[in-house]
Each structure stands twice: as structure tokens, then as C-alpha cells.
Image (cartoon, rainbow, N blue to C red; front, side, top):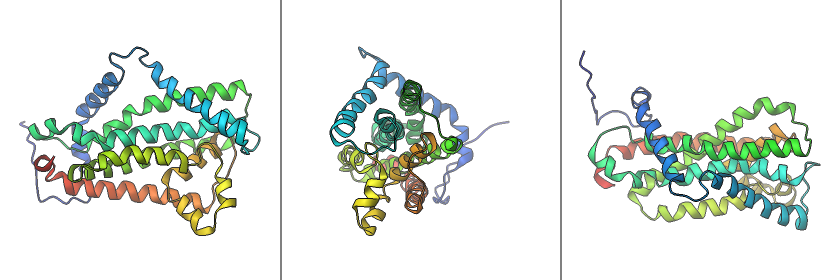
Length: 276
């Protein structure tokens, strides 16, 4: 039986074609494997870079916030407290930045052949799992080193991991589609990563924000999708912090960003090969 691919320009752009994405799953894995090899090809330290970056960041956070500022971590050793937040943030920052510039980077392939363009930013989510796995291994080491009792709420950790993936892809898909029309967004992404590192409660607990800011500013703070997710990581793993009403604001923003990102990407995908 002959198989044919039908490209329907009149198809609704409100949702991705899941059947088509599954049909191109081999391309998805090939793109992810290519990115993984390119990332560590011809490097002196190779995969050690994935360990070195979170370790250096953790040392800086520990010196500044753990020794000098001495933030309240609820009795948890500061390195474990900070790394618990960094695990999710490291994944989010990588996937957001890589998927945001992914369409521009693959413009030659887009011009030559047809395939569901959404595969390109989605493949970055798989590559980012390497950084997440490294940060998780470091966190497990610190949990054993400091003899920390893992919270019984850890059964909810997969929920927060899924939310982290959706948050990274939601913003990344938005940026990848916007960058096609407005190339200035290539310069916006590094700024968002840098800004997000400080406005997300990674090095400090979210309770500081609750005590220090007025109510309207607290809501604005939790409009950052990673604010509630980082708090969720600590609550699930270390048992510190809490899931309160404002963290659900972050979760709601994640869903909105992801669904609206898919919709906007599909609307741009029709003309992507013409304007890229």
C-alpha cells in the first residue's frame, strides 16, 4: 500500500497534528542526538561541562546567600536547598534558550523539505534532560552527604517535572515562532535567562517574597512560571516551603503559555519556509 503525505494549508492551526508528530518520531530523536553530539564534540572536558556549570553556580550561591546573607532554609543545608531549585531552573533555562533559537538555526532544512516544524523546538526538551540528570545526581549526593530525610511528598515530584518541561517548551515555542518574524528576540532570550535567575526563588526561599512585598507584587512575582515550580521541587523533595494559592498562579501560567505557544506556532508554521 502506498503511503502519501498530504499537506493541507486550510487545516485548523489551533492544535498540533499529534499523528503527524508521531510519524516523524525518528526525525525527533535524530535531531536530539545530533544536538547532543554537537554540544560536546571537540571539547576538552566533554560531558564534565555539564557537572562544572552547576557546581560553580552552587559555590557562588553558597558563598553569597549561604555564608554572607544567611537566608533561612528551614533547617536544610544551604547547598542542598539551592541545588534543589537549580535542578529545575537549569533544565528550564537550557530548553528555553535552545528552542527559542532552534527554528532560525534550522532554516536551511526548513526551506528544503517538509516536516512538522514543531519537532525542532520539541527535540530540545530531550537534550536538556542531560543537564537535569546531572543536577539531580549532584542533589542525590548532597542528600546522602548531609543525611537529609527525603520528604514523603516526593510522590508529587513527577508533576513538577512535567510542569517544568511544559514551562520551558511553552516559552521556547513562543520565542521560536516570534524570532522568525522579529529577529530581535534572539537577543531577548539571554536577557530572560539572566533576569529569571534572580527573580526565581532559586537561591532564596519564596517566603521572603511573601513577607517583603505587597500583595499585588506577590501575585506579579508568581506570574513567573518557574517561581511556583521551584517551590514545588523543594516542597516535594526536601519538605520545606508550601504549596499555596500563589503557586497555583504559576501553574496556571504554565498551561496558558504552553497552549497559546502551540496555537501561535501553528499559525506561523504555514508561512515559516517563506519568511525564515
